[in-house]
Image (tube, rainbow, N blue to C red; front, side, top):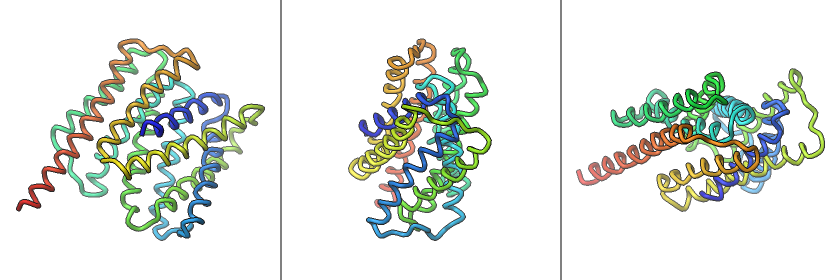
Amino acid sequence: MFLSTFAFALANVFVKEVSHIPAMEVVFFRCTTAAAFCLIGLHRARASFIGNNHKYLFLRGFFGTLALGLFFLTVQKIPLATAMTFQYLSPIFTAVIAIFFLGERVRPLQWLFYLTAFAGVLFIAQVDARVSYFYMFLGVLSAFGSGVAYNLVRRLKDEEHPLTIILHFQLVGVAAGFVSLFFAWQAPAGSDWLYLLMIGVFSQLGQIFLTNALSREKAASAAIILYSGLVYGISFGWIFYGETQSLSTIFGMLLVVLGVAASVLYGRRVKRVEEIQITAG
């Protein structure tokens, strides 16, 4: 999990390095690289490239691309650690959307944790002059898109090969990114090509490490380590871009992380208790 968060953080650094390139153009190059990895993996696994549930595969790709494009935009425009913090809201949207999409429940105490996390976001926008409410909104909208995408993945996990689901996300990203090139194109030059390649490579490495971690360790234990990425975000932002964080901003970040982490841990604890009660009964 630490390798996964490190790889994703490095990918974000390279996204910031190409801040002069439109975010959707970066999405195009990132998804093209990732799609190539997926095609190779599907060929080796002898799994379906096309899939079965085309409607949900497309929707997963659409909302995943929306989330990715907005996240890249916030990474380019606001401090790195802050953009990453906003993205940490995605588990909250995942749980809330699951109420309507998968018929799951949210416990009353979890709503308190959610409010704590959102209070942290509003606090950051209030105390950090580098973060406008516009980019705060885009960051939250990105987390919402991720939440929808995660629910669609859960809906598809018993029907499709994991790489098939990922491939369709990348293909939608390639298509949307390609269309955007006709409206906003900035020709990469020199080291830009290397940075764009590294975005795809480190994103894929992060996904591989994440998948391996979740397959070997309890999900709750592994997921909490994911928030160590905030340390990388703060460190890389300071080292590479001179982005310092005030104590007030760090306090807001901690509110977000604590709110989301507490909700995840509490939700899994309640689920385990219910499973034990059902077994005992």
